Image (cartoon, rainbow, N blue to C red):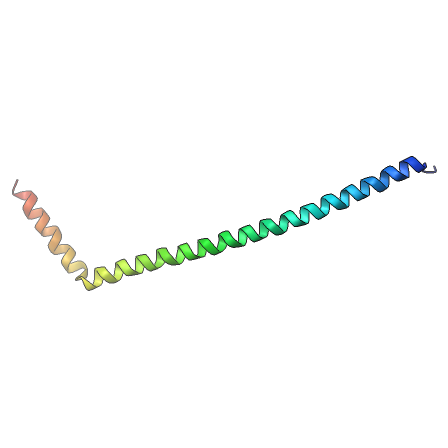
Length: 84
């Protein structure tokens, strides 16, 4: 069955539309990838900030006497509360 000239031109136009859509999709994927990379970088920095804050809090806890000062503070609070 021979293909008419009109059908052939329609197929060429469809192929061109598919190529254009594919090119647009590729560019969109590139921009999405760049955005995801930036988000990953920000999350990585935030993770390091949180870990540094936890480490700093632990170091402050140890320098201020650790558990021994926490036990003293708890016994002081208990003594004060027991007086009421």
